[in-house]
Structures are given as structure tokens and as C-alpha cells.
Length: 211
Image 1 (cartoon, rainbow, N blue to C red):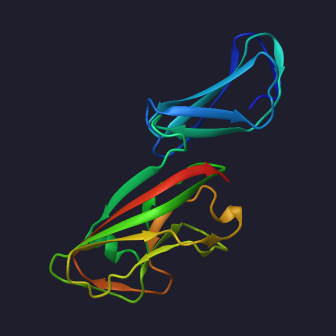
Image 2: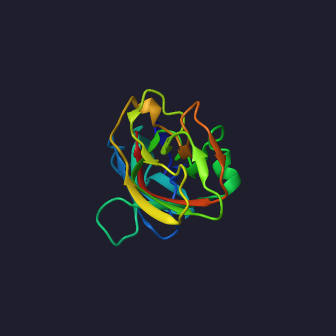
């Protein structure tokens, strides 16, 4: 933002997507380059999942161009915001996992990365177990060149209602493999899932930061 002259009381404004941000949460905006004297900057949650940043000049001045880092928290803790997303897969969603990944956390936006910490899986058995040739994996969609970085659950033949917690394994890869990627649950390519009628509820705890 910036990079040109600005009249007094004029602002550069940009809005970015930050999943989990809620109106009323505290937003901290930090420039990576000093924009200049008599320049102010602030951020606020303008709508659920959206943060608006204003960089304003109090006098006629040149506003130096800068990237602005954004941190959102609920005001109750000093650290960044720990977010949570919960989804439930129906039997139809489960049976489609071999070809259609199921989105757990939406893509955060350009230049941003979702950093998952923990997953909780709750499987609700109905009447017929699934036959699955591999574990289900939660990870970044289209995560090319990523080694590790997954939270697995094996539901092959399970015939009881149960829950388990899985931490996110270490991930190694290029930034492009993670940037603006949603977190999805899927089966590895070539594996199959058949039968079954149970449901699966997944909760992911995560944060969002610049790549």
C-alpha cells in the first residue's frame, strides 16, 4: 500500500480475507517499511472473515510503499488468534473422498498460509462400516512438494462411535505449496472407499499468517 503522494485526510484502503476474524476483535497492523511522518495506519474487522486496513496522511505527503502485516486476536491473549473450524461429512461426502477432497478450512487469500495445529475427528457409526484402502488425510490442497504435513485417521472397518485427536505432522516444502491453499480431507490418489453410512465431524485449530 502507498507508493504515491496523498492529500491531507486521504487514505489508502485495502481489504483482505482472514478466516475466523470476527467483528470486534483486535487488529494490529505493522508496516514493514516506515511509510513516512504524519502517516497513520490502522486495521479493523469490517465483516466476518475480512479485515480492512487504512493508511492515511494527515498532511499533503508522499506515502512510502510498504507491505503491512496483520494480526488479529480476541483481546484476551497477547498472541495471535487461534481459530477453529468444524465441519461434518455425510455418508455421501465420505464416499466421494477418493475423488473430491472435502474442505475443512477455506483458502485464506493471496500471500497467506494456514498453519494447522491440531485436528479432532469424531466418527459416528450408523449401521455399516466403511471399507477404506488407506487412511484419510487432512492437509493443504494442491500441496505440491510437501513432505509430511498431514493428520491421518484410519476408519477402515470401524463399527463404533469414537473420537480421536491428531496433531499436525511436520511439513517441509516450498512456500508456493502452502500459500492460499485450503485445508482439506481426502484419500491419497489411487485409494478407494466403499460401503459405510457413518458421519465424520472434523475440528481444525489453526492460525493464519503471511507466507
